[in-house]
Image 1 (tube, rainbow, N blue to C red):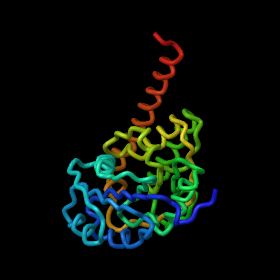
Image 2 (cartoon, rainbow, N blue to C red):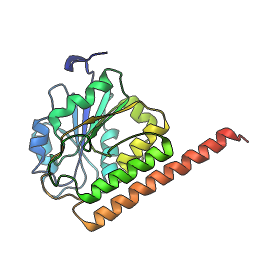
Image 3 (cartoon, one colour):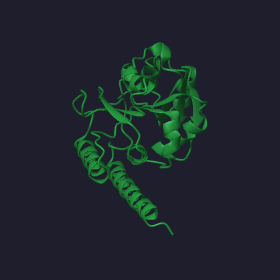
Length: 244
């Protein structure tokens, strides 16, 4: 099935943001006109991120509990009924002009979930740190070994049907959000697809890869989520195989 921008249905964009006032103008100005809702989840910014987003026409929700997942969950709670949800970062590292490539396979019914892969696409020198490259490889390797599902990246730029997203029962409040989504998509048999995307050096300093504490925290949480989900999958298999 071939789709055009005219029949993508209703598409919402969610942008978790912490002190992204400098980057948000370029991000929000690039969002396509066919997007029906844009929600910026201000995660306790002190630089006027929320005011910038409102001035540029985005809906702003406030989540004071720090964490990428917390911000995404708060935005989802404010989301009206839509067909497709797009997640992207507010630091201008994702190329928003490529959003149609992410959304089109979902709108066409060719995929439930589409991930923009920075590994398969072009990325600026230094856009991904060596720690991020290794962490992505390790996490994706574990997902392939445990669930036989092949991903190349844990990139933030992604689109998913809202009804499929609701089936995932997302809950992680921080660094584990992206890997939780991918692991649960594999567990529940969603049709997943990756498309190559461009990735740029972010505007401003990373809250995760820019600090030793952030790198260690993110890596530890990602591995924790993978093994937690693996144990849960094993427990569910045992219950199905040996009902009381």
